[in-house]
Image 1 (cartoon, rainbow, N blue to C red):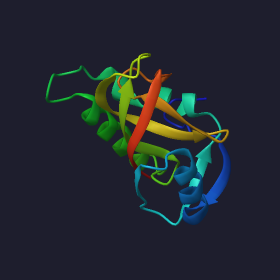
Image 2: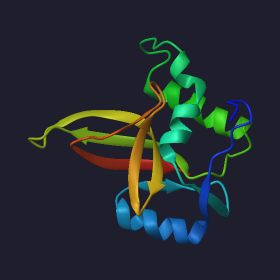
Image 3: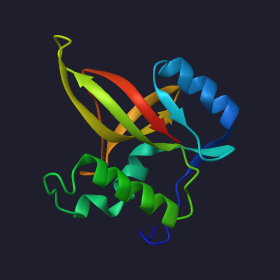
Length: 139
């Protein structure tokens, strides 16, 4: 499949109401901001984050950092015509194994198999954190 003709595989369609309920259960303290009435659920979030060209850009401290890379991802998915795919602009607090707050960070979040999983547009990969608190999701 050509990179330029790529389209994400979609596992389903979900309404704003259904998605709000699921996200409230998974991230009860998060601020939720919705832009559409219906959303497409990607079957393979790893493929979606990998296909984004943001990983080709260089990190520039305080200019192109985590929020800049998420902005590039969001623009890319809109340009591809998939601005209503459940790949969310996500602000998180993440913690060490000893429950110490490490940092606030911006990533892309996906709803996958009933869980929120995270992707780093800086390197085009899904990531795991020891413990995460979702602060805000823009869907």
